[in-house]
Image (cartoon, rainbow, N blue to C red; front, side, top):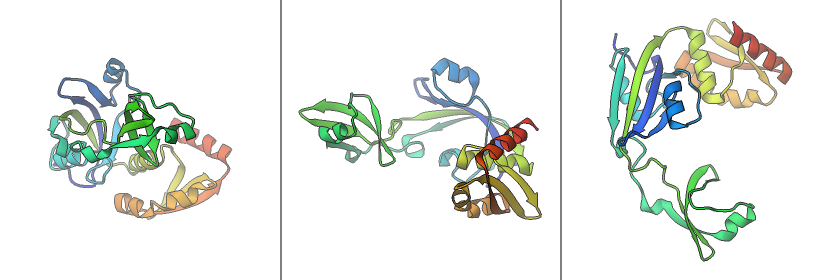
Length: 222
């Protein structure tokens, strides 16, 4: 049956430049070949919900489980290079943060990554373009299966938004999660997304951090 928007799928993929250089993957063999760090495990996400590259989502909707090679031009991948995104900053900006701007180094400026191009005369030229901007890319992707189990879907959403698991239980249309103090307000920010993706209403109970770790280990070992 063709895949539809909001379907959860499990995939393995490797993303390359036209010259074959791997820049992203969740396959152990390709991570090893490229020297990249990452989790060598299948990725589960909901189609058309901004959990993967939009162009990949658009391509896969209507497809079947199987293997695909998807070639994307810059406008469909990571955007075209914008000269306006190359800026000159005073060297003192870096010195105040006690960092040394070496050409090639990447720094975080209020959530935006920038790569140092040159350092000269007390000024630093930085590039705020995505490192892959302006490049054609290729995704070799294998849809392993469509996910129907609600528990697998919940774990995938938690992993995507929070990079961790939480103990939870489902009662009717209610998803009751347990999380450390402070997480409740953060999780509730995504309640509309849980409703949209899972058709469940989220509530959160605060528990001690030690208890959470023990319960997460129990979930992972089940």
